[in-house]
Image (tube, rainbow, N blue to C red; front, side, top):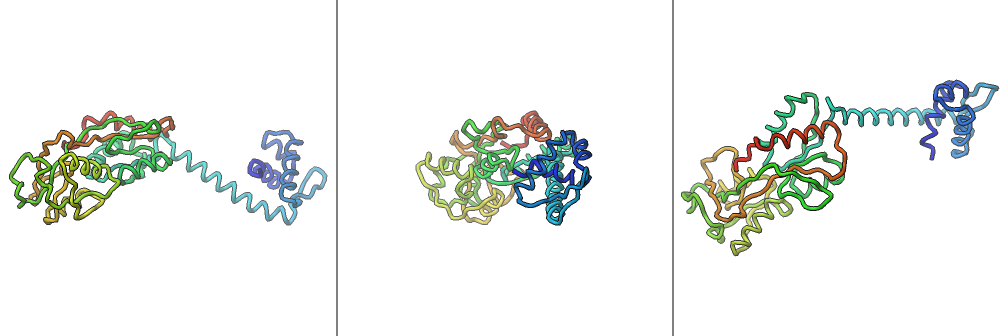
Length: 296
């Protein structure tokens, strides 16, 4: 209840004159007098001593004014920060993306966008899809790149592309010389996978179920390149998107299942207005989707 009255009290206290304060605030003097009186009533403390047309602060008024000035200064700093966030030239974009997109695709997008908007700042978040979508709903993120494409009317998404998934095996694996395999051929092998909750883990589990088995998981991780390293060490096989660069210690084999692919999408909250820099970045990403290095 006090918040709308604080600036009015501070103006009277600073000028020590109700009439001049009313003129500065462009409000009628009686209205301002009533506002200050209401502050005193809410606090139960006399803040001003009236001396004709002028006023002076009481001891309680000086104590309260110091707190009011700190509060108003903090509000002003917050307002300036909020305006800076939305600055179309130098504002900030909170952007989330999958770990597997951070090696090449996202850097390519950021490089292209910054060529047009060099002063825009980014808060970059790498996480799994479910976590990013929750942060998107809560307003922590403006945009995120996820897979699979989210369902539900509260989120809007646009397809960026598709990746064909590979069966990754050690270089000395019995199937390493093959180009194309059925997933059922490794039903007895140990698997290294992403943790539950990751979109790629759900796809892996679904592909194994389609092939008639439940994978025997030996290691769970949070990042695809770590899993590729575990495969290279002979600790299992994995279903992963294509590597950005070939590795001599693993073989990446095509999977015969038509479902061995994942759709990549850009998502945002339906109906929530984006700041100008976030809107500009969304427009750029959608315009550049055909040039994304997905190595499908």
